[in-house]
Image (cartoon, rainbow, N blue to C red; front, top):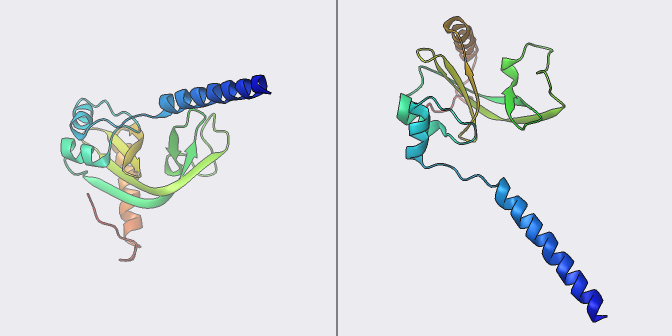
Length: 157
């Protein structure tokens, strides 16, 4: 009986040790705000490691800002692609069915050529675009804004 209990305890300890190691590997610590700002200034836009505040502190407020409840395609590598960046009726290449939804915050910096998308204050999508592509996107936002009610409006960064 003592041998069975000892084996059971050793097995449980092994399982807990493996689970703890996996959890430790899975936890990513967020860089400090100063470190994030340095990343932004160097255009090293690391997903899930940069906040909207760091971008605003480093580059100033976005010339074009948009916020909406949005759907995101979750890719196999767990990156996300906003639905608005995929043609209507299409899905991104390699997508396997994951969807995430939330309040997407979009910053467009035409002078730098960047579209940045945040979910829960973290950068989840970035795309380098040509000025005409960013212009078309921001014109669409301006058109949509004409139809928003005051209830739908949120504060700008």
